[in-house]
Length: 110
Image (cartoon, rainbow, N blue to C red):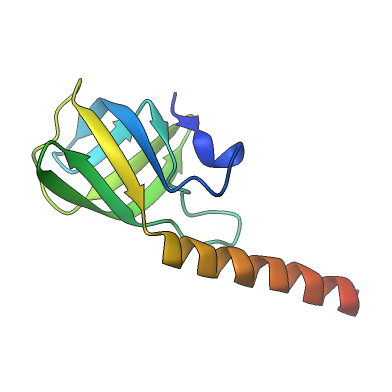
């Protein structure tokens, strides 16, 4: 089960995590994440997962059952790796503002 840190604080921009599962080399499940998965009418987050001096770009995030899977741009992460996650904050914040605006507009119409 992935702990969804964004539910408690949608303004988190980075966090430490541990890789708990890797599937097909590029689909990574972490013990906790700041990356919002696609769903609820909102697109997924993007950003970076860093191990030491290696950078893995997060290109897709999806929720499957109680796991949040992060698709990265290349293979190399392994179970047990300690990583640091960095959110593409500009992208997230743009979607947060648009989502809020859509709710405000809907409240005026309905």
